[in-house]
Amino acid sequence: MSIGALRNCPCWCGSGKKFKHCHLRRAEEKRVDLAEVIAEQKRADKKYCLHPRAAKGVCGGNIVRAHSIQRNGNGLKQIAVDSHVYTIDVSTTGFVKRDGALGLLKTGIGKATTFTGFCSHHDKLVFLPIEDRPLEVTKETCFLLGYRAVCRELFAKRRQTDMLKFGKTLDRGLDVIQQVAHQQEFKLYSGGVIAGLEDIDDSKKRYDDVLLSNSFEDSHFFAVELSKTPELMCSGSTQLENDFGGKVLQGIEEYANHGTRLDALTFTMCGTESGGLAVFQWVGENTSADKFIQSFIDTDDNVKGSLLIQFCFETFENIAISIEWWDSLNENLKNCLSSRMEAGASLEVARDQDSLVPDGRSYTTNQVIGAIRG
Image (cartoon, rainbow, N blue to C red; front, top):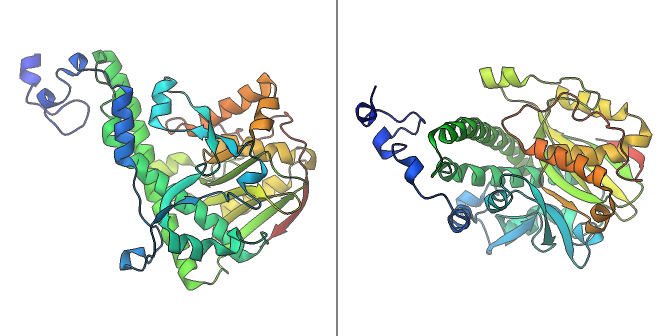
């Protein structure tokens, strides 16, 4: 079929537009520049309150930069150098600057790990038990750590979804072969983002029910006590695919083909008055979480401190890293963790089955000195 005949056909990229209004002259269009990327990021930046009663008009005060990892007390201030930490730069601007690669960004602790997802009233009201006093390990406090991680994850996924329309146009100025490659990769990426949004939205609703009931019996946790302040702090939510022994917990193919929800849990690593804490937390019955936690318990105690760092880089992007610690690592250790960071960010490639098995490298001298299950 000739190009002329294709003009009024639906475009091959799946946009729903006619070919003549979509990819007919895409190769002749101007390449997307950094100014456009920055403008699109600003457009996608939103401010709203995620509290379940916010829609009923019970918010008070302005939207604030809510910290998903506490700033003062046992938080970011403990690992900061001149009030700065390293964070993983997942911005579209960063991707463009580094030609699609992730990187670390020196960030002030007033901005690091923040999101504009709560009003000042609800941010204070909800998270008071884990903000303005020494952190105690209880069902309530561990739930709130998990709730904050889920809210931040939902906020990030909504923002990613808002950027999809723009991301589909990033093949402007490329030749046809490159356009096809981009659209194929982007289809996988966008499918992952949309599925992830549906999952975290479903989780948020279950967490909201617990929050509003003010009963935490359906919330469960496994808290690991560390001998010293961790070199990085983390807050995130993840679906459980494989455990720390390399066993498959849930099949991604079954999830993709049948639309079933995968078991998930939240993870928070932070400082305490005397050392550090790593909290695995989930709501409701979760057999995958039980197996996952048992695989961590079964791991050699001597490698658990390094395994937690390995887990963070492999799984999450919302982490704050001690500049002093990172800069002290040799290039081999930096490269290993950077590779895990890249692999963890991919939505197109299934995670390797052995990705959470201890890799034999020593990233820290931090030791597990106790554990609490609730």
